[in-house]
Image 1 (cartoon, rainbow, N blue to C red):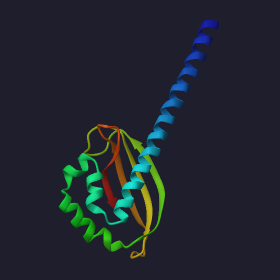
Image 2 (image 1 turned 180 degrees about the vertical axis):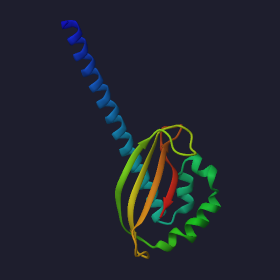
Image 3 (image 1 turned 90 degrees about the vertical axis):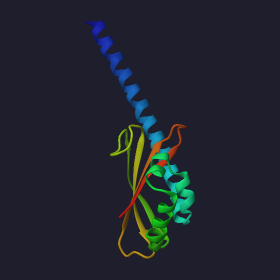
Image 4 (image 1 turned 135 degrees about the horizontal axis):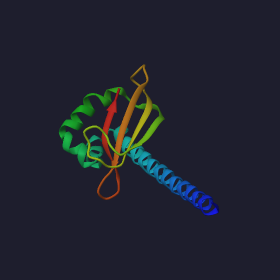
Length: 143
C-alpha cells in the first residue's frame, strides 16, 4: 500500500513538473511571438509595407504577392491614419490554424484606435514558427 501511495505521489509531482514546464514553455513562446508581432506592426505603422511583406512568413508571402500587399495596405490601411493607441486584448497559442499547415502559432488581437477612424478597430495578427525557429507573420486582419 505504501508503494502505491509513494508511486502516486511521485507521479503527481512529476506530472505537475512537466505541466509547469509546458506552461512555462508556452508562455515563453507567447512572449517571443508578441515581440515579433510588435516589431512587425512597427513596420506597418511606419508604412514600410514592402519590408513587412518581406519579414512575413512563407505562408503569408505565398498567398499574397508583394505588389498586392503594398497596394492593399496603401489603399486601405494608410487611410486609417496614425495609431493613437493599441491595446493587447488577447493572445492564444495554437497548433493548428484554418488553411495553414500544422505547427506552432500564436494569434494576437489588439483593440486599436486610429487618427482617421471614429470607431475602435480590431487588429488580429497570426504568427507561426518558421523552419529556423523564428516567429513570422502568417496573417493580418483588420476590422
